[in-house]
Image (cartoon, rainbow, N blue to C red; front, side, top):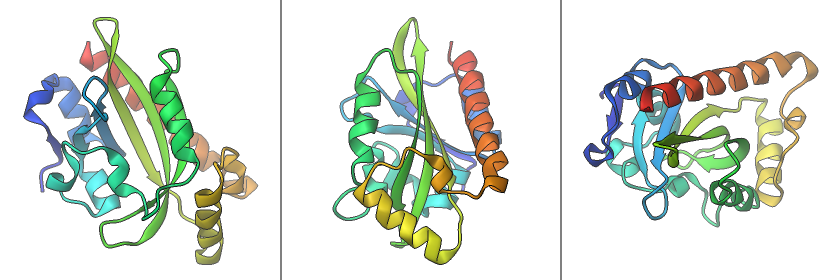
Length: 182
């Protein structure tokens, strides 16, 4: 599999594509201007985490990752983020399923990227949440019922450094992507 796959019509700059190809962080990019914000790019790490093939991903809204019945109340907050032109970055804990049907919690960082002063793309950085099997199952069920905004539910105090690292990685990818899109 290629290190990253893009919709040819997305017309993404070479430097932006290279960021995806060289990243060890799961990255996706959606076209904000097209109806339903379809994904127009994803990298190898995303395909590994999700188990999906490029044909299942490119040109589709990321809803395909949701479990049957949807991902719960977090989707309303994600929708509000996308609809609010003033909101630039946000993070979400989203119950997802792999192509094989395995449930997992996805810590998603979303950043709006601008071209010529207008929001054009949404960069997604995804991190699969790892915890003990029982703890993860409980968190997953809870995330389906309520929007888990307090990320301290995910980790013990000693793991806060991990969340900080995820946020720093997502933020740095967002800054680099914006610089390479302009």
